[in-house]
Image (cartoon, rainbow, N blue to C red; front, side):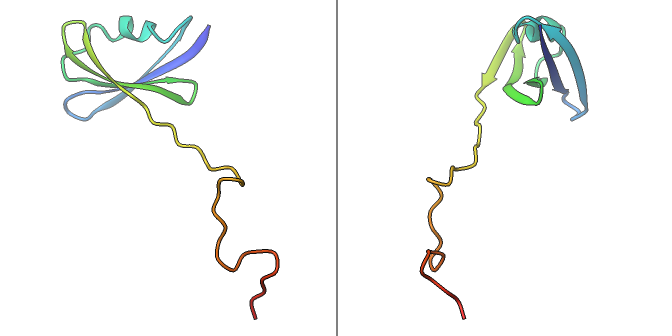
Length: 90
């Protein structure tokens, strides 16, 4: 079983956290089914953000994607001018 949590934000911008254990993140929909329309939910597995969702009607959810940023590898990081092997600053 996975460890999940949701951050639920209501129309008044109040936040609450709902922790749960489940076989899959789909369980979040069952837990949030009684929320009011317009509520926003961020769904996490551990500390990893899985989805942002907004309830738009009875059992209707709009699901937004989540962009994940990663640090570039040393190979992908552009060299700084003057930072090469033969340079010196005096």
